[in-house]
Length: 128
Image 1 (tube, rainbow, N blue to C red):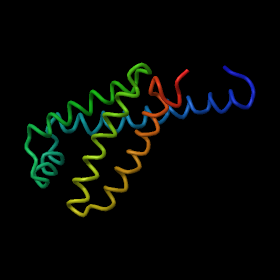
Image 2 (image 1 turned 180 degrees about the vertical axis):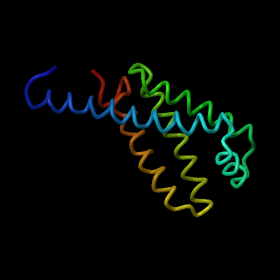
Image 3 (image 1 turned 90 degrees about the vertical axis):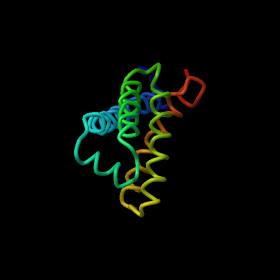
Image 4 (image 1 turned 30 degrees about the vertical axis):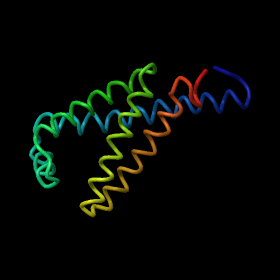
């Protein structure tokens, strides 16, 4: 653990990165699992959005991959970047259907994913 004011800030950022990564991974693990298992709610949502069951399955698998990547520091920036791309798509779909509360939730998760990606990127802010 680093000492001094800079060390406390750095250590605090690492803790926040781990916590946000865990929360984002849990969210993507939960939703991805429901999409892959064919949850009736997920099936109905994808039908309402005009998306196929193959799209639901593929998106569910990608969400599980992103969740797994978030848990490994070496791959965290890739997982967070993948989450960010998925969340941008979610924002677009929810905007198109005027689901404004869902857009807000997606934007919060997008901010989390963006912060993690920048912090965890090997050549970014969190680079050692």
